[in-house]
Image (tube, one colour):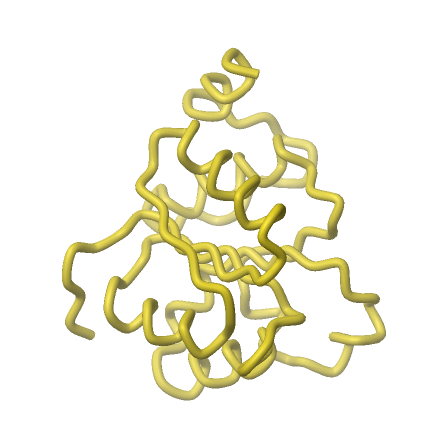
Length: 148
C-alpha cells in the first residue's frame, strides 16, 4: 500500500454532528485526523492515506461499513485490527458479519468518550491488544479530560 502524507486517524461517519464530535476528540488528543462521509470515500482515503486508526460507522451511504470491512478483509486484512467501529445499529443488524469480530473494538452510540479515547490511543500504540473494558488509559486521554 502506497500512502501519501499518512494521517493518524480517519473517521468514516455520515452524521455530521457525530463526525465533528469524533474529529474534535481526536484533535484534542493531539492526533491528525481526516474524515470521509461515506464508505467509498472512506476506502479511497484508507488506501491513499494509510491511517493508523480508523473509526468506522456501519450505516453509511454508497458503501456501508459492512462492505468496507469485507473489502478490507479480502484485500488488506491486517488493517481490520486498526478499526474501531462506532455504531447505533442494533446487534441483530451486524450479528452475521464475521468481519465485525476482526475489528479492534465495537463501541455503541452514544459514545463513551473515555472508552473511545483509550481505544484510539491503544490502537495507535503499534497494535497492542485492546485494554479490557473499563481500563483507564493515561496520557492523551488525561489531556482530553483536563481540557473538557
